[in-house]
Image (cartoon, rainbow, N blue to C red; front, side, top):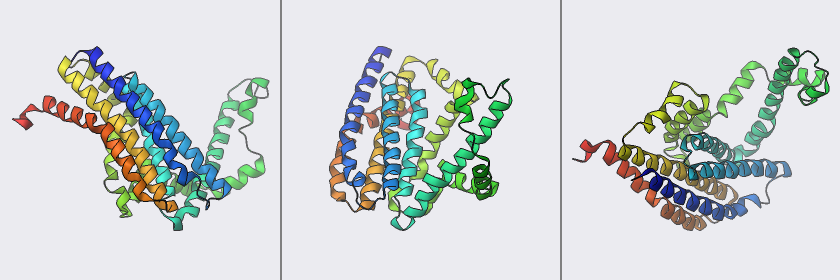
Length: 288
């Protein structure tokens, strides 16, 4: 298959996924309109859902233009945002405490970090009081607030919170909970790790894309489509996971998700075929 044919097919797949994802977003209405939220809780969840939808759409648009490695980094963001959302909504008993950690404690820790970075930045400029540094100075906390937050979040507490709310900590907590919604979730670790290489521009991250470009046409085309299909599939599966956990939390009709599942499976069918075709081309002896 020639490159232009591969890219045309990829754009068609991405356009279909984009249309599907947009059509499914209103299905989150039972969650967003749940009367049990406080105003702050509703706002937090709205922020998370909006961020996930925005990054999902950006990743799909990058896929449409065959920028798969940059899309990989955004899909990593979708993974992490989705994990935070479902961890928050995993248990009604734990929701309030988890919400405080996410929306308040981690936010205040971020304020401390911003304060210290702003201090370092202002320390190296010739005139830290100049108008051009106003935005940086605004990140500085009042002395009393800085002292209070520093005492509240010592190094051990900061590390504990950040580790538990990081990707590995969330995966571990969800998988080890025995909750059937998260069975097999640890399988996300490989893709997340590959995206980390790309994001941090280590030797793996900067070489893997170019290595693919030097493959023969058939191998290069097949892995491109398989990779593309996996990225698009991940976006849709994260959306379904958010819906499923959200519906369960608010007590919405779970049977309504069967139609969503069917819609996603139909869209994903060509992706599975692409993955199978790549495997046959890349590992022919396995099919001899």
